[in-house]
Length: 253
Image 1 (cartoon, rainbow, N blue to C red):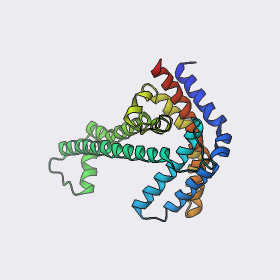
Image 2: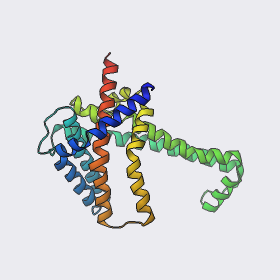
Image 3: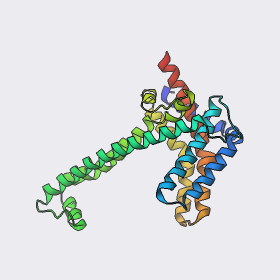
Image 4: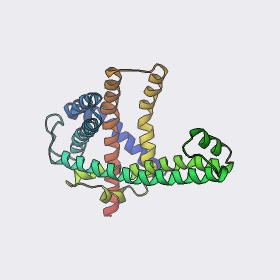
């Protein structure tokens, strides 16, 4: 067994085996996160984003405080310094994603425009049909233009995984940690990706089943939030804590 597979297996065991205990210790915070997620659907866009962020922060605060032996509050429910720090970290990560995403959009657009112009010098950039025809007749260039968005998505996924220690580092070190936590994930991206995919498989399966009979209304939102906060969030937090501790020890060694 390679170090990578051992790390993945150990992290998965840490996340799944502790799932029941995490829920029992943090159920009040997780329940509030579910309620906030449902309520967010009835709010205007700006308030909706804040409600969703608050839900994630409350859940993460409870789960990572428990993981690092910090004051838990009422079954995980509290809003203290850790939550403010996590909220600040989320805003910084969101800003970084907006910046990188904007740069990627410009680059992808430039690639698509270059390929389309090479295929159709008189391209009408305001016509969707003209774009479709130009890219369809671009030959290998069309393949490049089609792969560019996938490359951009891969970069964003990589960035998200490299920043995945923001929450545990922020709670464990009692300070907002975004770029300073970045080095801890060096060499861990394949393991983190594998863990995320494996833990997310049950959620994806439920999504496929729902897709066969498209759901509507508050029931679906509540069900999805319940799966996220009573399974995925605690399991991911447990697995992430396991990998984070290994990374911190390796960096200190």
